[in-house]
Each structure stands twice: as structure tokens, then as C-alpha cells.
Length: 205
Image 1: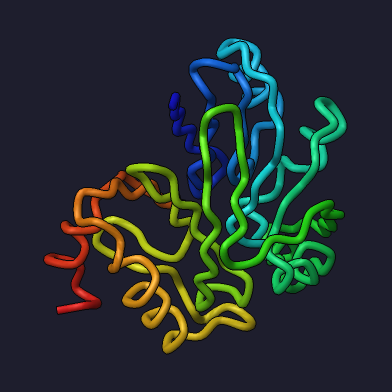
Image 2: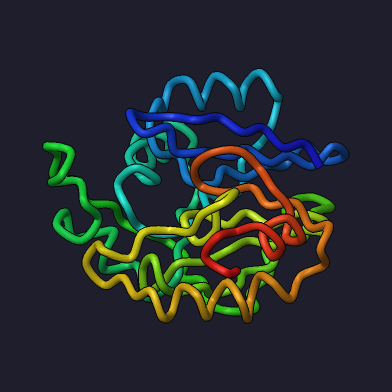
């Protein structure tokens, strides 16, 4: 699997472009800004994008969605509990950035769903806390954690509908049960591993 991490926007949210080395099918995770740059990268990688996959509905992870969909016409996927957030500028925090953004989704995700991109299988796990419908995306040896778990930190819970109790439970019961060498690709900042976070993340000491 080819993985490209592209920090975008004013607060450098990580967008990921994944591609199957054999079929050239691909997926975009959290296109939060710079639609033209992301489309150029897709062309450079020679990928046929199958889905736009959103780990949650906050503006810094969705701001380029509408423009990218207009250009490449692929379905937008998000957990059912964050679909209202996509449509509501107050909940998706776009008003905090001086915008009023609404996004229409195509596919509602739920716990246990599996998306196939060429030879790649990606399993959806529901990890509420940062948002009600926050998800993480599990591959063979990696997990894309959105704003649930970072290297040395965790997602904020002081935004509308956030819950520290649910977030800590999600991390302990959904992420920390993964193999220790599973690589973490978070929504902001550098990568890590499950073992590293279990041993050193200050929120779990």
C-alpha cells in the first residue's frame, strides 16, 4: 500500500492519500484544504480515487471536500452520527474560521464496515469522543486515527458534542487492543505506534 501524508490548511491537518500498488485504486482521507494540490498529487500518483473518507466532520478535515468531489465525482463517506455535523456550520466549526460550510454525504459508515480499495481492506471502528461519529480506519499494519489519538496526545473534547469519558474509552477499548507495532497515522502531527502510545502517552499513565 502506498501512503502519502499531506499536511494542509492553517492548522496543518493531515490528509492521507492511500493507493493500491497493484490496481491503482485509491482513497482520500480527510481532505481539509488545498483541493488543487491534492488533485495534483492524485494525478502524480496515477490513482483512481474510489472514496473520500472522513474520520469526523470538523472543518479542518473537510474544507476541500466539495471542490474535490466536483472534480473527481466520488462518494463521500462518514459515520452516521457525524452526518448532521457535515451539514451544520456551527457544529462543523467552519464559522470559527469565518466560513459557512455545508457538505452532503453519500455513504453512512458504521462499526465493522470494510471498504475495499484494490487489494486493500480498510475496517471502520467507531471511536466517539472528539465527535459523536468519530472513526478510526484500520489496515493490515496501520490505523488512521483522525483526531482521536495523536503522538503523545489525544483529541480535544471541548468542542460541541465532545466527551472526554467517551474518548478515553474509545482509545483504551478500540485502539489499545490493536497489535503494539500497528503504526498510527493521526489527524495532526507525526506518526507513532500503538505500543509507543500505551507506554508514553501522558493521558494514560
